Length: 356
Image (tube, rainbow, N blue to C red):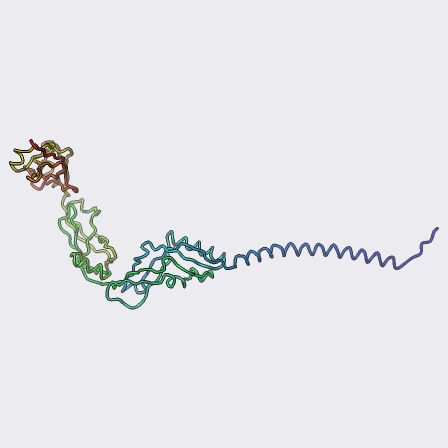
């Protein structure tokens, strides 16, 4: 049997190589794990850093509206730009600008950015010219996202402000078919509006609250109708307090209409014009005429033989006239209470006046 001598150094070398290989594999795996974790994180950090870099000169559309800092006593209106749309140049991080752009898009659709207008009380209508940037730059819309407004177009806003006036005014009933009488409780209400509007209404005799009875169903039933709640016809820039009243209404049967045709046309002209010129026109109107009145009386009108004529009036100055002339209607025996419904524009017929 051959004897192999034992060498401790050989064993030590083999163990060392095995340990080195084991640690090398573990190191590679550990390094790989570290890389897999660090690489995405590095990319995210890089993306975040890119987004946080300042992006200058972004031009974005924005819509604004103005509100009064003292709405109980002052009214403010945006005069220019009339639609409230402005353009804003901003700078900030890309992420901040993207968020602001989305919010500004909402202002264009349904939610304008409100600009509060304050200052000392005014005695009457006053126009203010305000720097646009000063009015919007401090809004939370921008600073909460780290975005700065650098310029605006237009550079200024024109705002009208006016002191609100209050006056007690009577409640009135409109002229509606079938309404005979109306009594309101309370009979007066408070009317609040800007001084410019109130002064104009005062000049026109319009300082009253007009009851909105156009669609009141009770008026279709003859008789007395008590405790009917009614609102008022809206008046621009004006509010009423209270905004409704109770009404007692008396109604009669509403007027009815009837179409009548044919309606003959007659000429009224000076004898000289008739003797020396030929007047060409249709002696019957092309379209039916509407008469209106109480139902019982309208029913007495013969729709094919109405007691009604159309009158065409000419003067000597109409010699050589070729064109349209208006006609008026003359009652030739219509039932009492029946009349021709007013037409707007008035009825016209073609007339030609030529020498004989």
